[in-house]
Length: 197
Ligand SMILES: [Fe+2]
Ligand SMILES: [Fe+2]
Image 1 (cartoon, rainbow, N blue to C red):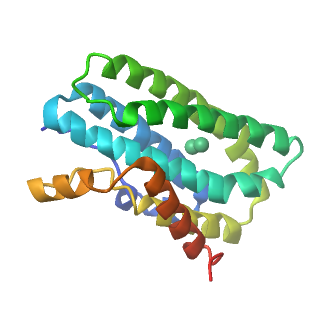
Image 2: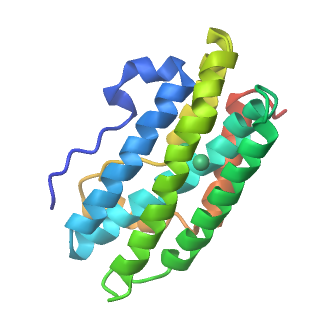
Image 3: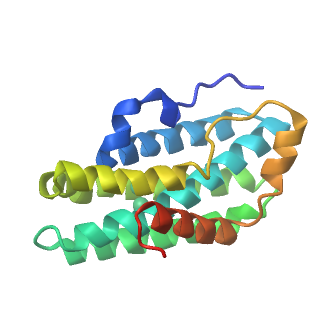
């Protein structure tokens, strides 16, 4: 077992009311999980990789449901900025799908993981520079908080920390493919933001 400390939601209460702080913390969590996958081996790597895949899936889904639609209307040239981010997300999701079924012991795993990491981090930096700064300027406190609520609902579907015990590891493995997780995340976000029923 590696003892990398991966921060998670409960470590940072301030983030709960500001969607930008929350998303930037998730970018940090994602970076830490990439480190954890690279630094571990065997079952630990498999477990860390599952957590990384889940967090990436719910993070990008939440952004697509909550943040990009708001940003699209929030500032000049927003349409172009958001379209570029969506194209990057699409690319990252393709790399993710290519890795999803790959054995973490496969010699091709680490090189492909690094390709994914590069595209995910380029994307995250672009969001922070070209999108999040505008969101913070254009959204009032209530809007930042309501968007944060949607992102928190998504985050609840992806624990970043390993749960001790073989049983929960088995449960984590049984959660099914990324596409299904993204669908469930969409539902959770919409419900949390009162867009559903
Ligand atoms: Fe994104
Ligand atoms: Fe992001």
